[in-house]
Length: 188
Image (cartoon, rainbow, N blue to C red; front, side):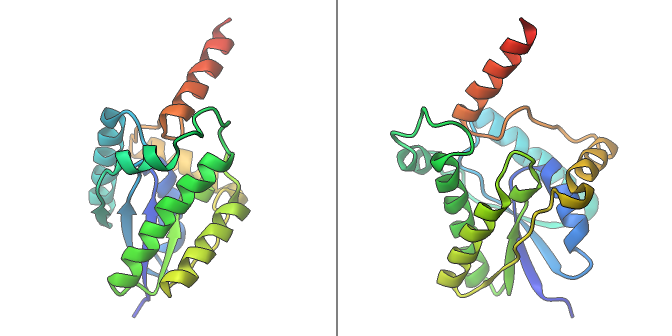
């Protein structure tokens, strides 16, 4: 019998390779908790896409509440920080705490996250946060850098095969503004 693992999922494209990597060893359940995603229409689009993908591959999926007011309160005063800074670390911590808590309360032996698949995310910091919240909630964290060994490229390939929506920014309104600025500067 495989051990139960709860996988925090940020979006469908990022989940593809990670699910493939873990499903043979673990009884995997997805956990979609992302109160950072804005606007709400974008959140709903990503949640719907993840629900569709989970259905297509037979993955159990839990969609947690959209607690955006709490996220905005938590990040107040950090609006002008660049992507990848302290605001992002706080955001990772918020999502991983909630995942660890759910895993602990519902009989999962461990949890992991898809966050490290992104070439824009610091896996060492994500793994450090995951390990700390795991210890607090008395559950194991699966540290990984899923972008390595072609993981990110494979996620793009699988996403195309399933026709998954691939967003142009991480999720929060501040990362959207940065992405919009980059896109505008490329057009000049």
